[in-house]
Length: 634
Image (tube, rainbow, N blue to C red):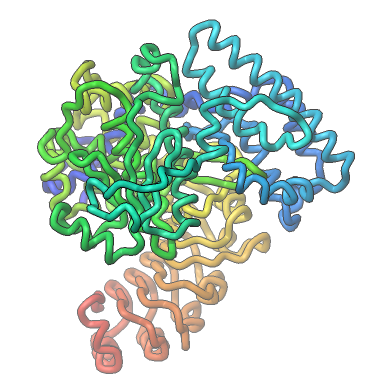
C-alpha cells in the first residue's frame, strides 16, 4: 500500500493492476474537474442559487428563521422548515439542488400536514404572503432569462416555480406544462393491452401506465406502479436540468423542453425477483446480482421492487436510458465495446445520489455533494486505502473490461468519485463532463477532459476529497445517505459535533486519521447509533469506550493504533452485537481476550502489534474456532 504523499507525487507511484480501475476512475473524474476550473468549490448553477438572491427569498428566509418551530428540533414539523430554508439557500459544496412538485394525489395527503406546520391561521396566511411574492419574482425572472435566450436558467427557474407553487395552497398559481408530467403522472392505457414486445406477456396479464414521457408495463402492485410513474417523471425532470447542454441543440430545434423525443421511454416492472431473473437470465449475465437493468439493444429498462424498493437502481438505469435515448442524434456508443466506458457508469453512479426530502406537497432534491453515497466508497479507497489507478489503463477500458468481476467494486467507486468531482466543481467543469458524455454517446463533439494524466490529477482529486466535508452550511440529512467516510480529511471535533447533532443514526462512519478526541463521541447533544465505526489513528481514549460499546447496533469497531487498554474494553463483556473488532497496535493484553469469549457474534478479531500472547490467542481460537480464518494473530 502506498502512502498518500507518494500517491500525489505520481512519478514515484507504483500503479495498481488494471482491475483497480474503478478507484482510478472515481479519483480521476474528481481531479479533472478541479483542474479544469482551477476553482474547485465554485457552486454550479442550481435552482437554489437561482433564487437565493431574490429579495422575496431573503425575506421569506428571515421570516422562517424567526419562527420558534424552525429552531426546535423536537417540533414535529422542524424538518419541513429545514427543507424550506435549504430550498432558499445556495449549496456551498457544488451539489445541485432542486424543488419539484409531488403528484396531485400525494400532495392532497400532505395538505393537512402543511397547515399544521404553522402555529396559527395568521402565521399560515403570512407565509402565503411571503411565498406569493417569491413566486411572482421567480416567474418574472424566468421570463427575463428566456427573453435573453438564457434558456437553461429559465428552465430551472420554471421548475423551481412549479415545485414551490403547491405550497401556496390559498393562491392560484399558473400550471407549467412540463410539471403536469409529475402533477398528473398517470394516464390510463388502452382497454386492450397488446402482447408485450419484449417480455412476451399477454395483454390481459399486465397493467399499462402511460405518462407524458414513459410507457410502463407493470406486473407489480398498483401502488408500486403509481410510485414508479411519479419517480420516473421526477428523475427525468432532474436529469433534464442537470444535463441541459447535452440536449440543448435538440431543444433549440423542437422548442419543447418537456418532450425531447416523441418516443416514450419504455419501462418494465416485474412482480418479483424470480420473475425478473427468469425473464432476463438468457440475455443478461449475472442478472441475479442486479435489481434493475437497462438494455440499449431492446431500449427498455427492467426493474422489480422488493421490500426495500431499489430506488438507487431505478435512478441509475434510467440515467443510462436518458443518455442513450433522450435525443434523436445517431447513437455511437456500444456499452460492451466502446472504450472510455467509465464515464457512462460514473455518471449513473453520480445520479444515484439523487436524494429526496419531503417539503409539504413538494420535494427537495439534492444530487451530488460531499456526503453523496457513492462518494464515500471512493473516498475510502483513495484517502483511507491510498489507492490510485493509472489513467492510461482505466480510461481505455470497454464495458466488457470494466465489468470483469475482479476488483469490480474498486472500478465502480473510482468511476463514481471522478464524475462527482467534475460535476461538483463549478459550471465550467460540469460542462466539460457533459460535453465528454456527448462525445462518448454520439461522437459529434470534441472531448476535452483536461488534464487527463497522472501528474496533476491525484493532487487535485485529493484536494476535492478532503475539502468537500469542510464546506460551511448546516448538514441536511437524507435517508439514502447513511454512510460517512471522512478518513484523512483533517476534520476537527467542532465540525463533527455540528454534524452529529443533526443526525445520530448511521450505517458506516469512518473518522480514521483525523485529529479528534473523546469529546466527539461523548457530546451530550446527541446519542450516536452507528453500525460500523472506524477510529483508527485518532486520539480517542478509554473514556469514550463505554459510550461506544453501548451503541445497540454496533457490528464493527476499529480502534487500531489508538491508546486503548484492557480497562476501556471491559465494556466488551457479553456484547451481543459486535462481529468485527480491530485492535491492532493498541495496549491490550490477554485480559481483553478473556472478555471476548463472552461475545456470541464475534467473527473477526485483529490483535497484531499488541501485548496479547500467542497462548491466550490459541485459547480463544479453541473457544471460537471461526475466528481463525478472518483474524490477525499476535
